[in-house]
Amino acid sequence: QKEVEQDPGPLSVPEGAIVSLNCTYSNSAFQYFMWYRQYSRKGPELLMYTYSSGNKEDGRFTAQVDKSSKYISLFIRDSQPSDSATYLCAMTAGTGGFKTIFGAGTRLFVKA
Amino acid sequence: SAVISQKPSRDICQRGTSLTIQCQVDSQVTMMFWYRQQPGQSLTLIATANQGSEATYESGFVIDKFPISRPNLTFSTLTVSNMSPEDSSIYLCSVGEAGGYGYTFGSGTRLTVV
Image 1 (cartoon, chains in turn yellow, green):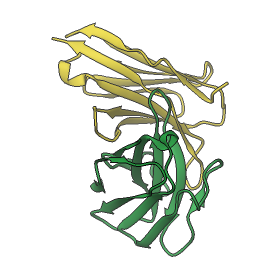
Image 2 (image 1 turned 90 degrees about the vertical axis):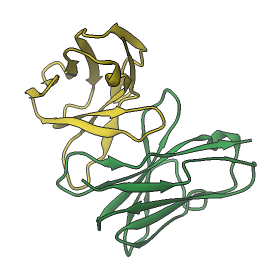
Image 3 (image 1 turned 180 degrees about the vertical axis):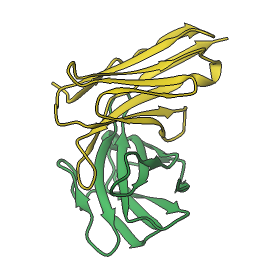
């Protein structure tokens, strides 16, 4: 079993839809949770990070962590064609020497 | 956040040859990381490069195959040696600081070995 599982998609939605992207994990030691966005032929860019359980909102993006279920989500409201990219979840037990484990990424297409 | 310039952006190489990938950062950073990204798979850490010391390699990666240099706090190279088609992948340079919760990545080098 992989430490982090992420549905590869692709996920195709119409413009304006609410998008839900998810990851599950097995290591209960994970404390920091991140979402990266990767456009084609580009490196991943950090979109959001959260610590422990709870929600964090940044504009149209909301990151949600449920540590009891070992489940994290990224919601995109009012999705735009420019949101079309691969979204990778990532997580780590801490800073200063702990490895960051990445999901395989979900490809998202937002149709105009 | 740091800006990373990675070269080359892509290359097609013959098996048995070597390719050196360069990573230049616009600010001094303590830790630099090299990742491999294969289609449909998660980012895999190859090694951590710290200035003034030997790189630390992850399980499954060895220095003879992936030698790394880190001559100063803004630059690193990764060499993919004696390449085979199985080395075809995207290689990414990344920087991050202890205490930071995320990393900055270069645009990657798309390597095809024929």
